[in-house]
Image (cartoon, rainbow, N blue to C red; front, side, top):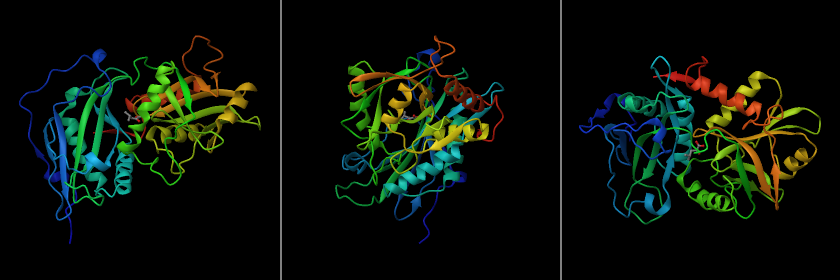
Length: 370
Ligand code: COI
Protein backbone atom coordinates (compact mmCIF):
# COMPACT_ATOMS: atom_id res chain seq x y z
CA UNK A 1 0.00 0.00 0.00
CA UNK A 2 1.21 3.49 -0.88
CA UNK A 3 1.56 5.62 2.27
CA UNK A 4 1.28 9.40 2.02
CA UNK A 5 4.52 11.38 2.23
CA UNK A 6 4.87 14.93 3.53
CA UNK A 7 3.32 17.35 1.01
CA UNK A 8 4.00 21.04 1.59
CA UNK A 9 1.25 21.92 -0.88
CA UNK A 10 -1.29 20.58 1.60
CA UNK A 11 -0.14 22.72 4.50
CA UNK A 12 -2.89 24.23 6.63
CA UNK A 13 -2.18 27.48 8.44
CA UNK A 14 -3.94 28.51 11.64
CA UNK A 15 -2.58 31.92 12.52
CA UNK A 16 -2.14 32.91 16.14
CA UNK A 17 -4.55 35.58 17.30
CA UNK A 18 -2.39 36.54 20.27
CA UNK A 19 0.98 37.52 18.88
CA UNK A 20 3.60 37.70 21.63
CA UNK A 21 5.88 40.65 22.34
CA UNK A 22 9.41 40.34 21.02
CA UNK A 23 12.24 40.12 23.56
CA UNK A 24 15.14 42.58 23.14
CA UNK A 25 18.07 40.68 21.61
CA UNK A 26 20.37 41.40 24.57
CA UNK A 27 17.92 39.67 26.97
CA UNK A 28 17.73 36.42 25.00
CA UNK A 29 18.91 33.27 26.76
CA UNK A 30 19.66 30.40 24.37
CA UNK A 31 16.53 28.38 23.66
CA UNK A 32 14.20 29.95 26.22
CA UNK A 33 11.96 32.12 24.02
CA UNK A 34 9.68 30.66 21.36
CA UNK A 35 7.98 32.23 18.38
CA UNK A 36 4.24 32.52 17.70
CA UNK A 37 3.84 29.41 15.59
CA UNK A 38 4.93 25.80 15.26
CA UNK A 39 4.63 23.14 12.58
CA UNK A 40 3.11 19.73 13.26
CA UNK A 41 2.86 16.71 11.01
CA UNK A 42 1.38 13.46 12.28
CA UNK A 43 2.22 10.04 10.96
CA UNK A 44 0.59 6.66 11.34
CA UNK A 45 1.53 3.29 9.95
CA UNK A 46 -1.77 2.92 8.04
CA UNK A 47 -1.89 6.20 6.16
CA UNK A 48 1.60 7.68 6.41
CA UNK A 49 2.06 11.44 6.81
CA UNK A 50 -0.97 13.65 7.34
CA UNK A 51 -1.34 17.23 6.08
CA UNK A 52 1.19 19.58 7.70
CA UNK A 53 -0.32 22.15 10.06
CA UNK A 54 1.16 25.45 11.14
CA UNK A 55 -0.56 26.52 14.32
CA UNK A 56 0.01 28.72 17.35
CA UNK A 57 2.99 27.57 19.46
CA UNK A 58 1.51 25.56 22.28
CA UNK A 59 1.23 22.35 24.22
CA UNK A 60 1.33 18.87 22.77
CA UNK A 61 -1.07 16.46 24.40
CA UNK A 62 0.13 12.87 24.74
CA UNK A 63 -0.76 9.97 26.97
CA UNK A 64 1.85 9.05 29.59
CA UNK A 65 2.22 5.71 27.84
CA UNK A 66 3.50 7.37 24.64
CA UNK A 67 6.71 5.59 23.60
CA UNK A 68 8.76 8.79 23.54
CA UNK A 69 8.47 9.06 27.34
CA UNK A 70 9.79 5.57 27.98
CA UNK A 71 12.27 4.53 25.35
CA UNK A 72 13.57 7.82 23.96
CA UNK A 73 11.99 7.56 20.54
CA UNK A 74 13.19 11.05 19.72
CA UNK A 75 15.55 12.57 17.20
CA UNK A 76 16.06 16.21 16.34
CA UNK A 77 17.88 18.80 14.28
CA UNK A 78 19.26 22.26 14.88
CA UNK A 79 19.69 24.95 12.22
CA UNK A 80 19.40 28.70 12.09
CA UNK A 81 17.68 31.38 10.02
CA UNK A 82 19.52 34.68 9.56
CA UNK A 83 18.40 38.15 8.50
CA UNK A 84 20.80 39.73 6.03
CA UNK A 85 21.38 43.47 5.64
CA UNK A 86 18.84 43.66 2.80
CA UNK A 87 16.19 42.03 4.98
CA UNK A 88 16.34 38.63 3.26
CA UNK A 89 15.86 35.47 5.31
CA UNK A 90 18.69 32.99 4.87
CA UNK A 91 19.23 29.38 5.91
CA UNK A 92 22.65 27.71 6.06
CA UNK A 93 22.95 24.33 4.30
CA UNK A 94 19.46 23.18 5.39
CA UNK A 95 19.62 20.18 3.03
CA UNK A 96 22.30 18.70 5.28
CA UNK A 97 20.02 18.93 8.32
CA UNK A 98 17.22 17.21 6.43
CA UNK A 99 19.52 14.36 5.39
CA UNK A 100 20.84 13.90 8.92
CA UNK A 101 17.31 14.06 10.36
CA UNK A 102 16.26 11.16 8.11
CA UNK A 103 19.34 9.19 9.13
CA UNK A 104 18.69 9.72 12.84
CA UNK A 105 15.04 8.71 12.38
CA UNK A 106 16.09 5.51 10.60
CA UNK A 107 18.39 4.59 13.50
CA UNK A 108 15.37 4.69 15.84
CA UNK A 109 12.93 3.06 13.35
CA UNK A 110 10.99 6.33 13.29
CA UNK A 111 9.25 6.96 9.94
CA UNK A 112 11.09 8.25 6.90
CA UNK A 113 9.90 11.32 4.99
CA UNK A 114 10.72 13.47 1.99
CA UNK A 115 13.34 15.92 3.28
CA UNK A 116 12.76 18.45 0.49
CA UNK A 117 9.04 18.60 1.29
CA UNK A 118 9.78 19.03 4.99
CA UNK A 119 12.19 21.83 4.15
CA UNK A 120 9.45 23.62 2.19
CA UNK A 121 7.16 23.34 5.24
CA UNK A 122 9.94 24.68 7.45
CA UNK A 123 10.41 27.67 5.13
CA UNK A 124 6.69 28.50 5.36
CA UNK A 125 6.93 28.49 9.16
CA UNK A 126 10.01 30.72 9.15
CA UNK A 127 8.41 33.20 6.74
CA UNK A 128 5.34 33.36 8.95
CA UNK A 129 7.43 34.00 12.08
CA UNK A 130 9.89 36.26 10.25
CA UNK A 131 9.57 39.11 12.77
CA UNK A 132 11.27 36.84 15.33
CA UNK A 133 14.55 36.63 13.39
CA UNK A 134 16.87 39.08 15.16
CA UNK A 135 18.75 41.27 12.69
CA UNK A 136 21.73 41.92 15.00
CA UNK A 137 25.02 40.33 14.07
CA UNK A 138 25.57 37.20 16.17
CA UNK A 139 21.83 36.67 16.56
CA UNK A 140 19.56 34.34 14.62
CA UNK A 141 16.48 32.19 14.83
CA UNK A 142 17.35 28.70 16.04
CA UNK A 143 15.08 26.13 14.39
CA UNK A 144 14.41 22.86 16.16
CA UNK A 145 12.74 20.08 14.17
CA UNK A 146 11.97 17.02 16.30
CA UNK A 147 10.42 13.62 15.58
CA UNK A 148 8.92 11.50 18.35
CA UNK A 149 7.25 8.10 18.64
CA UNK A 150 3.75 8.65 20.07
CA UNK A 151 2.13 5.21 20.14
CA UNK A 152 0.72 4.35 23.56
CA UNK A 153 2.73 1.26 24.32
CA UNK A 154 5.20 -0.09 26.83
CA UNK A 155 6.22 -2.83 24.44
CA UNK A 156 9.62 -2.17 22.95
CA UNK A 157 8.94 -2.21 19.24
CA UNK A 158 8.37 -0.08 16.17
CA UNK A 159 5.97 2.80 16.83
CA UNK A 160 2.78 2.85 14.76
CA UNK A 161 2.34 6.58 15.36
CA UNK A 162 4.71 9.51 15.31
CA UNK A 163 4.70 13.29 15.46
CA UNK A 164 7.10 15.58 13.67
CA UNK A 165 7.15 19.15 14.91
CA UNK A 166 9.25 22.25 14.42
CA UNK A 167 9.61 25.06 16.94
CA UNK A 168 11.76 28.17 16.67
CA UNK A 169 13.68 30.24 19.18
CA UNK A 170 15.42 33.60 18.69
CA UNK A 171 18.99 33.24 19.99
CA UNK A 172 22.22 35.09 20.58
CA UNK A 173 25.60 33.65 21.53
CA UNK A 174 25.33 30.14 23.02
CA UNK A 175 27.63 30.87 25.95
CA UNK A 176 27.05 33.85 28.23
CA UNK A 177 30.75 34.59 27.77
CA UNK A 178 30.17 35.01 24.00
CA UNK A 179 33.13 34.25 21.75
CA UNK A 180 35.58 33.75 24.62
CA UNK A 181 37.99 30.85 24.78
CA UNK A 182 36.84 28.04 27.07
CA UNK A 183 38.59 25.85 29.62
CA UNK A 184 37.83 22.12 29.38
CA UNK A 185 37.90 19.23 31.80
CA UNK A 186 38.85 16.00 30.01
CA UNK A 187 36.36 13.36 31.12
CA UNK A 188 38.19 10.12 31.84
CA UNK A 189 35.52 8.09 33.65
CA UNK A 190 32.61 8.25 31.17
CA UNK A 191 32.29 8.01 27.39
CA UNK A 192 29.82 9.78 25.09
CA UNK A 193 29.73 7.12 22.37
CA UNK A 194 31.34 3.85 21.33
CA UNK A 195 31.81 1.80 18.15
CA UNK A 196 28.47 0.41 17.00
CA UNK A 197 26.58 2.81 19.26
CA UNK A 198 24.47 5.84 18.37
CA UNK A 199 27.04 8.63 18.70
CA UNK A 200 26.57 9.61 15.05
CA UNK A 201 22.80 10.05 15.39
CA UNK A 202 21.24 13.31 16.57
CA UNK A 203 18.97 11.72 19.15
CA UNK A 204 17.86 13.13 22.48
CA UNK A 205 19.31 10.07 24.21
CA UNK A 206 22.83 11.28 23.40
CA UNK A 207 22.33 14.66 25.04
CA UNK A 208 20.84 14.16 28.51
CA UNK A 209 23.93 12.16 29.61
CA UNK A 210 26.12 15.14 28.67
CA UNK A 211 24.69 17.26 31.47
CA UNK A 212 26.28 15.35 34.36
CA UNK A 213 29.76 15.64 32.84
CA UNK A 214 29.13 19.31 32.12
CA UNK A 215 28.15 19.87 35.75
CA UNK A 216 31.19 17.93 36.95
CA UNK A 217 33.33 20.22 34.80
CA UNK A 218 31.54 23.36 36.05
CA UNK A 219 31.97 22.32 39.70
CA UNK A 220 35.71 22.21 39.15
CA UNK A 221 35.73 25.59 37.44
CA UNK A 222 35.71 24.52 33.78
CA UNK A 223 33.29 25.68 31.09
CA UNK A 224 32.77 22.34 29.39
CA UNK A 225 34.03 18.77 29.21
CA UNK A 226 36.17 17.07 26.59
CA UNK A 227 35.00 13.60 25.60
CA UNK A 228 37.68 10.95 25.15
CA UNK A 229 37.46 7.36 24.03
CA UNK A 230 39.50 4.22 24.46
CA UNK A 231 42.65 3.26 26.30
CA UNK A 232 44.72 5.80 24.38
CA UNK A 233 42.35 8.72 25.16
CA UNK A 234 41.23 9.54 21.64
CA UNK A 235 39.68 12.98 21.41
CA UNK A 236 36.07 12.67 20.22
CA UNK A 237 33.88 15.70 20.96
CA UNK A 238 33.82 18.74 23.20
CA UNK A 239 30.57 19.04 25.16
CA UNK A 240 27.97 18.77 22.36
CA UNK A 241 30.35 19.98 19.66
CA UNK A 242 32.85 18.52 17.21
CA UNK A 243 36.50 19.13 18.01
CA UNK A 244 39.36 20.50 15.87
CA UNK A 245 43.11 20.63 16.53
CA UNK A 246 45.56 22.73 14.51
CA UNK A 247 49.14 21.64 15.02
CA UNK A 248 52.51 21.26 13.43
CA UNK A 249 52.79 17.49 13.06
CA UNK A 250 55.92 15.35 13.54
CA UNK A 251 56.69 15.81 9.81
CA UNK A 252 56.71 19.56 10.45
CA UNK A 253 53.57 20.14 8.37
CA UNK A 254 50.77 22.38 9.59
CA UNK A 255 47.76 20.10 9.91
CA UNK A 256 44.14 20.65 10.87
CA UNK A 257 42.82 17.48 12.47
CA UNK A 258 39.31 16.41 13.43
CA UNK A 259 38.21 12.91 14.42
CA UNK A 260 36.80 10.83 11.53
CA UNK A 261 33.10 9.95 11.11
CA UNK A 262 33.60 6.40 12.36
CA UNK A 263 30.20 6.06 14.02
CA UNK A 264 31.09 7.74 17.32
CA UNK A 265 31.15 11.32 16.00
CA UNK A 266 28.17 13.48 15.04
CA UNK A 267 28.41 14.60 11.41
CA UNK A 268 28.21 18.30 12.21
CA UNK A 269 27.22 20.76 9.49
CA UNK A 270 29.73 23.25 10.90
CA UNK A 271 32.35 20.48 11.01
CA UNK A 272 31.77 19.70 7.34
CA UNK A 273 31.85 23.41 6.44
CA UNK A 274 35.17 23.94 8.23
CA UNK A 275 36.74 20.94 6.48
CA UNK A 276 35.45 22.11 3.14
CA UNK A 277 36.67 25.69 3.61
CA UNK A 278 40.08 24.51 4.84
CA UNK A 279 40.45 22.20 1.81
CA UNK A 280 39.47 25.04 -0.53
CA UNK A 281 42.07 27.35 1.05
CA UNK A 282 44.70 24.67 0.47
CA UNK A 283 47.08 26.35 2.93
CA UNK A 284 47.61 23.46 5.30
CA UNK A 285 47.01 19.73 5.51
CA UNK A 286 43.43 18.79 6.45
CA UNK A 287 42.88 15.41 8.10
CA UNK A 288 39.95 13.45 9.41
CA UNK A 289 41.92 11.08 11.55
CA UNK A 290 42.27 9.73 15.05
CA UNK A 291 44.01 12.14 17.42
CA UNK A 292 44.75 11.30 21.05
CA UNK A 293 45.33 13.43 24.13
CA UNK A 294 48.93 12.13 24.41
CA UNK A 295 49.57 13.41 20.85
CA UNK A 296 48.17 16.83 21.82
CA UNK A 297 50.20 16.91 25.06
CA UNK A 298 53.39 16.02 23.18
CA UNK A 299 52.72 18.66 20.51
CA UNK A 300 52.07 21.24 23.24
CA UNK A 301 55.28 20.33 25.09
CA UNK A 302 57.29 20.58 21.87
CA UNK A 303 55.71 23.93 20.95
CA UNK A 304 53.92 22.44 17.94
CA UNK A 305 50.33 22.84 19.16
CA UNK A 306 48.79 25.87 17.43
CA UNK A 307 45.04 26.07 18.18
CA UNK A 308 42.07 24.00 19.32
CA UNK A 309 38.38 24.72 19.00
CA UNK A 310 34.91 23.20 19.18
CA UNK A 311 32.47 23.56 16.28
CA UNK A 312 28.67 23.35 16.18
CA UNK A 313 25.57 25.14 14.94
CA UNK A 314 24.82 26.77 18.28
CA UNK A 315 28.32 28.24 18.87
CA UNK A 316 29.73 28.09 15.33
CA UNK A 317 33.25 27.84 16.76
CA UNK A 318 34.36 27.92 20.35
CA UNK A 319 38.08 28.54 20.95
CA UNK A 320 39.74 26.38 23.62
CA UNK A 321 42.42 27.81 25.90
CA UNK A 322 43.02 25.08 28.46
CA UNK A 323 42.43 21.36 29.04
CA UNK A 324 42.63 19.69 32.43
CA UNK A 325 44.01 16.22 31.74
CA UNK A 326 45.49 13.71 34.18
CA UNK A 327 45.96 16.16 37.03
CA UNK A 328 47.37 19.07 35.12
CA UNK A 329 46.10 22.08 33.22
CA UNK A 330 47.45 22.00 29.70
CA UNK A 331 47.41 25.44 28.20
CA UNK A 332 46.35 25.65 24.57
CA UNK A 333 47.81 28.51 22.52
CA UNK A 334 45.48 31.25 21.29
CA UNK A 335 47.21 33.98 19.28
CA UNK A 336 50.95 34.22 19.99
CA UNK A 337 51.14 37.54 18.09
CA UNK A 338 48.39 39.07 20.18
CA UNK A 339 48.55 37.97 23.84
CA UNK A 340 45.27 39.68 24.74
CA UNK A 341 43.34 37.80 22.03
CA UNK A 342 40.68 35.36 23.10
CA UNK A 343 40.92 33.21 20.00
CA UNK A 344 43.50 31.74 17.68
CA UNK A 345 43.78 33.41 14.27
CA UNK A 346 42.72 30.35 12.24
CA UNK A 347 39.79 29.68 14.61
CA UNK A 348 38.71 33.30 14.13
CA UNK A 349 39.08 33.07 10.38
CA UNK A 350 36.75 30.05 10.25
CA UNK A 351 34.23 31.90 12.41
CA UNK A 352 34.42 35.08 10.33
CA UNK A 353 34.04 33.29 7.01
CA UNK A 354 31.19 31.05 8.18
CA UNK A 355 29.34 33.96 9.80
CA UNK A 356 29.97 36.05 6.68
CA UNK A 357 28.40 33.34 4.53
CA UNK A 358 25.50 32.84 6.94
CA UNK A 359 24.58 36.55 6.87
CA UNK A 360 24.99 36.72 3.08
CA UNK A 361 28.01 39.04 3.20
CA UNK A 362 30.21 36.46 1.50
CA UNK A 363 28.33 35.04 -1.50
CA UNK A 364 28.25 31.24 -1.27
CA UNK A 365 25.96 28.41 -2.36
CA UNK A 366 25.61 27.27 1.27
CA UNK A 367 23.49 30.29 2.14
CA UNK A 368 19.95 29.87 0.83
CA UNK A 369 17.58 32.83 0.60
CA UNK A 370 14.04 31.72 1.37
C1 COI B 1 25.24 22.53 18.57
O1 COI B 1 24.68 23.21 17.73
O2 COI B 1 26.45 22.57 18.76
C2 COI B 1 24.44 21.62 19.37
O3 COI B 1 24.86 20.57 19.72
C3 COI B 1 23.09 22.12 19.69
C4 COI B 1 22.71 21.97 21.11
C5 COI B 1 21.80 23.09 21.51
C6 COI B 1 22.08 20.64 21.30
